[in-house]
Length: 180
Image 1: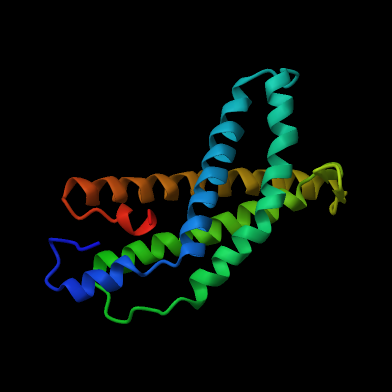
Image 2 (image 1 turned 60 degrees about the vertical axis):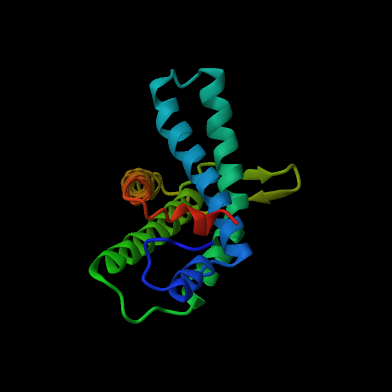
């Protein structure tokens, strides 16, 4: 795929191939899990605590996100070992910083999510993750930190999506690199 706005088709070919198939698949898996967990997690707080949908989401999301952890770890590993581009424009540095912020926020959300579990969680009726923290004070602090990190992640994802739309409107779509 060639970007007609680039000064060199070789440079645009390098950019188009910057993401391997595994990175692309893991990106979209991450997007699906993060968007679902964000919208459903923030959305159910509007419901009564005994509402069946809220109870289902509060049961399902810890299982989903716990199963997501190894995929996210793989994605993070691939991103960190990717060839760093040395000559970045300020806009590229900002994009890199936001991406690293997203990785950090997701890591924090997943870690605090596991640590704040108030009961064992059974994954696919096969594996039980035990409750790791039993102090009510520590659980409350982890819960608060988890919500702050979720809000930060939601802001960073919104910024990321806004940048994708802005690039598209300006005729320099970056979405093509993530859809192969």
